[in-house]
Image 1 (cartoon, one colour):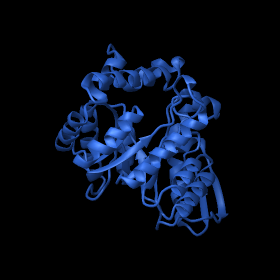
Image 2 (cartoon, one colour; image 1 turned 180 degrees about the horizontal axis):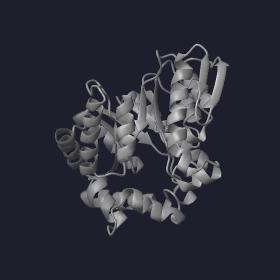
Image 3 (spheres, helix red, strand yellow; image 1 turned 135 degrees about the vertical axis):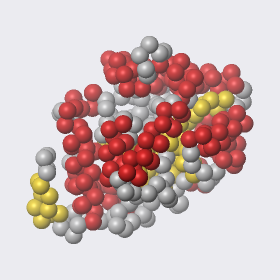
Image 4 (cartoon, helix red, strand yellow; image 1 turned 90 degrees about the vertical axis):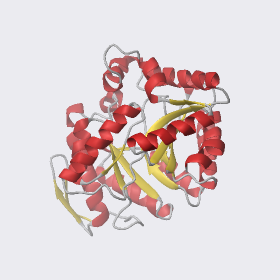
Length: 330
């Protein structure tokens, strides 16, 4: 099983200097490089202290400079908020500077505040996302880019640099909704699976993806499908549950801001279900290292989990994952 880390840059209650948040994250990334993790996947967010990382490509450059073998993933580049040629340049530059270690994950985004602040109409998010992805891939592979689309038009543009990895870095699309899964499968894209769905929901979504991928004439063989899971580890079940509850409350209350709670409720939680309890019961992997390792093994057998993308909810969780869980599952 491959194991990676979905690295958030959370700033809870702004208790420390923000520079400390980045320093601690980079220290963890160095540990990942030394202890057998496959990749760090950097989470892009804007206008929220849930994760203060507006440029995964800039942080990715720092991560690459501090590591030697760890792959540098974006989870995700929020494609609708970029000019596509600038996005193609930045990711290609990161791939070049990292020695060809980029995993490019692209996503559409759903936070209302981001679409409003960047003046991107939400109703255009899908078309902008898909068109941007197409342009980025062509910018990497075409000697000179010619393109006419709904939102962008380019004539005879040489986009430099080109990525080190040929024909381009491996690509994933963030896909949680049925329509996103079906579009990715129809184009033969691999997918990143979100940390907010329950394990049962992830299993159903993965089966749906496999069916649609096969129907489009593509094979699932040899694909890495990272499945993101929130993880809370401690020496006792009670302490781990407390970490999990704190993480669930932080996600629900701060992920998009209190004003966006209805959006989050609708996106991730069935009507009438307490969202915090749902995270505790069905979403977050929490407990002692032995219990969580057993749960991961069960998910491998039940839903085909072969690439675990962990989002540790505390520093202790990260260290216990690294020291006690990784040797059992990787």
